[in-house]
Structures are given as C-alpha cells and as structure tokens.
Image 1 (tube, rainbow, N blue to C red):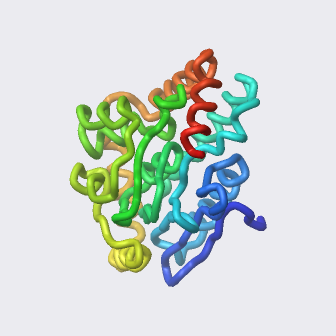
Image 2: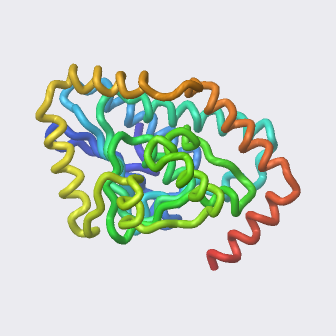
Image 3: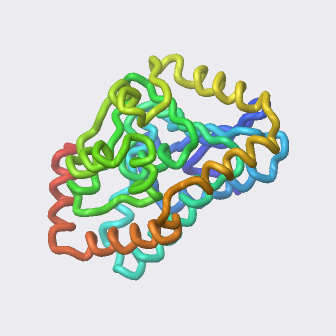
Length: 254
C-alpha cells in the first residue's frame, strides 16, 4: 500500500509510524486509520522489528479526529466508523511488540488515545495533551476510560475528562500520564534510546510480558468497555448540542 497519511520506516530493529497530515495537525481521518493498520500488520509480520514508535510530523502528534469527516455522517455511518476505530485501537493495545508514543506536540482526542494505547509515552516539554470531548458533546474511545485510570488513578482521570483541559508534557509526567518528558529537539533520540533498550531483550519474553499485562487488567472486559464507548459516543453525537458544540469549537480555533 502506498501511504498518503502516514510515513512508515524501519531503523535497525525498530519500526516508526509517523502521522503525516501536518497541514491539519495530523487530524485522524479514515484513510489514516487504514494506513496505520496496514503498517501495524507489516510490523507484526516483520521478525526483525521488536518495538514500534508512533510520532507526528510537524508541530502535533495528532489533534484527534478530523471533524470535517464526521460533521455530515448519519448515525449508522458513525457507528460503523466508531466500530472500525475501536478495532484499530484494539490492534494497537494488543500489538504483541512493545510500543512507544513520542508525543511531539498537541495530542488531543483520538491522538491522545493513540498515545494511551501505547505501552510507553515520552513527551516533549512543548506537548499539550488532553481530551476535549466534553467540550464538543462527544465521548472518549480507544479504551480511554480504563487506560487513563490505569495511569493516573480514578480521581485524576475524572478531573481530566470532566474539565476537558489540556495539560503540558511536564504536568503529564508529574501525574504519571507519561513516562518521561524531554526537550523537543531530543525527543526522537530519547524514543529510539528507549526502544534500543527494549530490543536488546528477548522478543519472546517481551511478547509474553505484554500479554501478561493485558491479562492483569481489571474486572470489566475490554470488549464490554469499548462497546460502551461506542454507545456513549453515538449518544453524544445524536444530541442537539453536538452541532453547536462543533461550531463553537471551530470558532475557538480561529
């Protein structure tokens, strides 16, 4: 597949997926998700790759879903889109090789959720991270209800999602949302240095350890949680507030 929305590279034993829609701050459309899943499958099948890094081209990791794609969708189209989005997120969460998010700038909404789906997060000091869903009458996806709580605890998770405020890379490190914060100019060096430490170890051990972490998660199954996320999103986009929220959000961006 020829990629239009991502760049896929391989360096030594590390794969790199770079979101490549910098003119729209790497907003995530259907084509980007399709290409990302293709690159994931290539990485999975490539026995030489033992770890995978995600990052963004330009000044954003990703500002989330491309709202231009969603504004005129019917509810049934939206359901199909969300189901495909959740399936793509499951593939990242369950990807059998360790994953690192190198958060180079804005990581909002689905972009934030992509970072959450990774095993390790390294953020630039210049990064801004957050879930704006409550501001645009939407709800989170990608298993975020569980993933955020796993990292920062239930109280802080509620604060982040209820207020819909962005936090800096340094604040994200302070609360445990990211593993490490570094200057932007050293971000990719730090990400590859972390990956180098990982790929020095047994690929089989890494696979089993990652599976163990997934098995150790809470009482509610990931399937049940992610099915609920679809219903929550659909319930939000069905409201009268949704269109006004999107218009207000667009005005704030200008």
